[in-house]
Amino acid sequence: MNDTFLRACRGEKTEYTPVWFMRQAGRYLPEYQRVRAKFTFLELCKSPELCTEVTLQPIDILGFDAAILFSDILIPMEAMNLSLEFHEGKGPIFPHPVRDQKAVDALVIPDPEERTPFVLETIRLLRKELKVPLIGFAGAPFTLATYLVEGGSSRVFLETKKMMFQAPELYDALLQKITRCTSLYLQAQARAGAQALQIFDSWAGVLAPCDFARFALPYVQTIISDLRRATDVPIIYFANNGASLLELSKTAGADVLGLDWRINIRDAIARAGNHAVQGNLDPIALFLPKAQLEERIKRLLEDARGARGHIFNLGHGIVPQTPPLQARIAVEAVHRFSGK
Image (cartoon, rainbow, N blue to C red):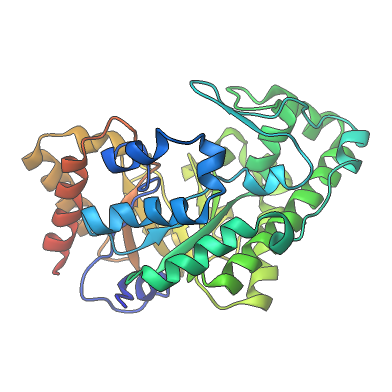
């Protein structure tokens, strides 16, 4: 087992900087497209054999140092008794948004073994195949709540913020249920064999720091506190667009702070305290000419030398239009410049 990623998460000395990419199993790979063409997205997410296949693809093809479970952050939300649809070009849709007490009361807190067994079976299958660590994941409660309240993706998050500001007790009741669901879901992933867990707060950056501290961070802290009692696997917290939230994010309790590309990694390390960091190449920088891409990666690695631990990653998910060759160039550059 190549455990470089796990050692970096724990702040231990590593021979080189491990690298993986968010959304590394996905639409930029022709091998994934061939699988996806035969199934809907939800059908793919609910097939352990297919999820195992597409999770392994980027490891076999590009040589990443960690695998991340192929799934979607909204899978456990569907298990809460919600109807979830995915539409091409529109993303996830909840046809019946959660905006009143009756809708919150109708939500159930699912048993992961009963309602999402396909996720746990995928983890068990992957552990038999992988020679690198497996990362499990879930969405952070605030980010998950935005989809439920808005009914899908949003630009201004009007309905979510209205609930926060005008009906804070309703908002808290909703977030408490999502938090409990997410906590149980991640604990089940760890029991099934996930060797690290990442919490994605994809929309945290739309909040003012004072609102992040009140309406998002406490629920993440609860989940991580629950996980600490249940497992010792490393925990990564990624607050996207969260440079202004870094001092707050480091109180979440995670081992590793994920960083987007909107902050210099040297500056982030100085502010991160006793945390390893993960990041933070702009995903579109993968379109740079080879020499310029390699130079940017080299500079980023040099800026990260002072980190307690550093996992190289993109500042957000790899975009579907990325040529796989560019991803390979990046992985090889990280390994070469960091000493592998």
